[in-house]
Structure formats: structure tokens, C-alpha cells
Length: 209
Image (cartoon, rainbow, N blue to C red; front, side, top):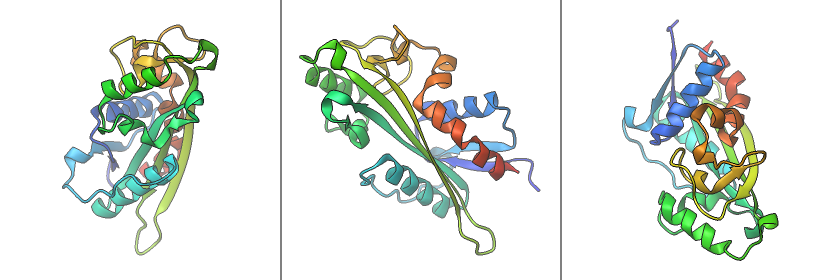
């Protein structure tokens, strides 16, 4: 039996990979060797066309497991803003029209909320994590899907240079600092992805056993 099991994280975002590593270490989970997409041969990735975070996360995890034969973790995450009818939602990464342009995405959200009063600027980060473990000897794959949420408000201007995405304009409930001003450890203990990954730990432990 191998000393550790390789688990593919279906992302090229190094910060997401480090975040999962911190959560596993903090929970005392051993026997899991995380690798990102840059560490495996390239394979066709289906476009994120799902209408929910769950659909997109599971599709990415299935693609990774099928292409590599490895257990695969994928997440789909974004911000749901009350005053925008829960948008950007699954469109968070490309809200401004260009995928992954954090500055443009946050600038557009701030412009859209310019006239929204402070008491109506509620929002929530959502992270859905999916783990797909390929079956052995013809058995079906095992699929686990979990959801984490983190409530707060949208600030009027960005603050902080940590984190990524909408972190600089999101102030969590009970905080005066933005998510981008929290330490990595503080963020892990509160964040939507941290909460989802905590829920995923039993399945990851099982995959490593």
C-alpha cells in the first residue's frame, strides 16, 4: 500500500492549492499528496456551463478523475450579492467579461452598488467542493459534494492585498477588516472554502486510507 495517495486539485490557482494544504495540515490529515493541474499531463477541460456551483464543481472533478485516474478535488466558488439578486454567483470569475480579471470584476461590482446604502450591501461567499474518487476493478466512482458559505457585506472601496478575487471588497460579519486584510490562518478558519473543505475532510481521509 503506498505511503500517500495523490489527489489532483483541479485548479491552476496556487493560492487554492496552498489553502487546501493548510486545511489538511491543520486537521492532521496525512497520507494525501496534493498536485495541481500544472503537475499532470494536460487534458481537455469542459467549459463551466453549469447554472449552479454544484454542477460546475462536480463536472471539473469528474473530468480530472477520468483523465488522470487520480482522486480529484474541484471547487466552484463566487460571491452572491443580495442587492444584485444573488449575482454574480457562478459568473463571479468573469463578471466583467474577462475571466479572472479580479480588478475589473471588483470595480464593476463597486460601480453597480455605488448608490446602494450600507444596510443593503449584504453578500455571501459560496464555495462548493467536489471530490471524485475513481472506482477500483470496474466499481463506480465515489462522489462527495459539500457547500460552505461566508456572510458579510460589500465595502465601498477595496482594502488589503491578501487573498484573491473579491476578498478586498468583502467584509465578513463580525469584522471591520476585509477578507484581504485577514491572515491566511484567520481566513481559513472563517472562509467559505475553509468551511467546505472542513466538510470534505472525512471523504479525503477515506481516500487516503
